[in-house]
Length: 136
Image (cartoon, rainbow, N blue to C red):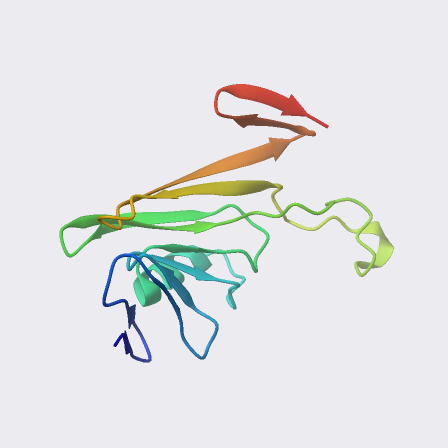
């Protein structure tokens, strides 16, 4: 039986993924995945303080907050966006959003829950991934 509380989600085993009623998923007991609700500049830090380590994408930005929590390095990554950031159909007068194109890769050691999260920015149609530059 897994424990779900309002502020924390915990898995009984490191080999499971648990989703609570709010849509917050916890992968292998250590990394929270949410769509996100906060959009301000401090969203990454606020999510880190509320959920522990994890990622969200609602802001379409690439902010990162990191710090030691309970003696362990923790971090929260905003996952950027993969959509166009030009000529956004719902922005008036051709305004450009303050968004960052990119994506995250996440590796979790299933036996321990130890994770490695890396951000890959897409800059002018080019992106680095595993030491190679890719372009559109």
